[in-house]
Length: 128
Image (tube, rainbow, N blue to C red; front, side, top):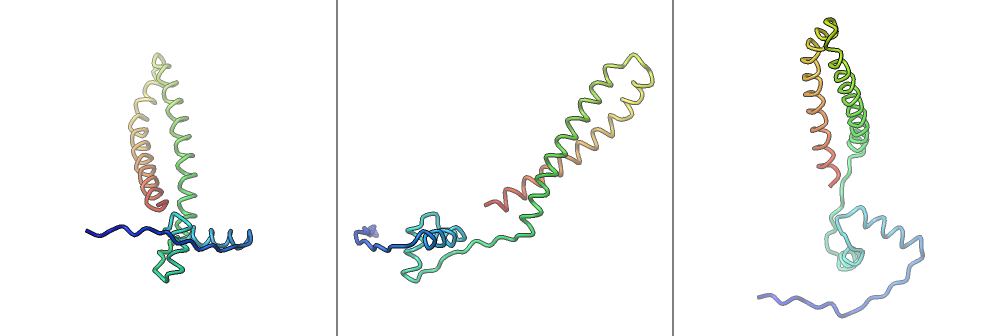
């Protein structure tokens, strides 16, 4: 069984505020969660895993999240209007219109749900 090595040696390095911010910025671009792990890898010449972000995908996801909010708002408004029209069931024209548009409503909501699901999946996969 391998014994865990205890790190009992200290290395103290003094940095300016700007140097420290730059070091943290570089660490943020890697998969290292702790600054000590990042610096240790650099000092010991071990590989550092750099995160790769596709800016165009980030922009796309930002736009899609905005679209998702707007679609939710449109869907809520549409639901409220249709519900209000159903209360006018005693007027034959409104009743016919509401019944005809019920199919359109389900198609619209189905498509909206598909878009929202896909945007959420994309967001989850790219935000990691």
